[in-house]
View (cartoon, rainbow, N blue to C red):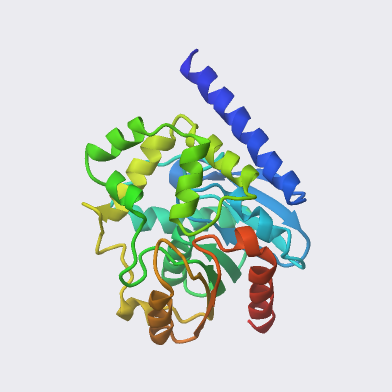
Length: 308
């Protein structure tokens, strides 16, 4: 099989898996592909709903369709579920730690401009929370308010789960990924490691495996982790300190899972002490608490958006 044939086959398999997730949660989302100059490629954005725009920015290693359970519960908005580069059907980018933040900000700005989304609220998760925070700092006024679901990437002393930290080690990362082939068992193990229960998440699990089978996925994960970590420690230019948290001046609601594998609720409690306008809600679950409790997360999100 040629390289192009393998790519086409993997892409078709991912599309099917993505559609099964949308069907399971009854989300009539459409895939929109926008040109993104900052990565010299295209990004997939899942669009559904009616009302004011609400971008949803997912984390760094999962596709946007992971938002589907929550999208089904968020009424009154046009939802734009944004993937980060190299996930799902979004083109990859060659990251480098010296330009990582610049790439992140430019990427989000390019997509928002292409979709003609002006200043407003955001719902974000993990790496998506970090990137949107950087966007708020670099382009003041663009982020009016933000619901950060789960531990935001590298806030205070938080970090990634162990397998992804090990991927950041030169040579070892590629070896580990080559030895661990994408599988249902492996996907369920990762879901458990981030604090979630894979039971009842068959479609979510399957789309995760389909994403891992994309030809560029291993290289992209290695590139991402090396850009944000050095020998398993977050790079200083990536980690968000207490002083930097004070610069997050827009209203923020943190929705934190009790079993979040990326950081304990204590980190969230310490974070809101430094942020000028923030509150924290701790709930059952892990790094993606909406997967089993979408109604609860949606209620906290609606309440916050109605106020801000």
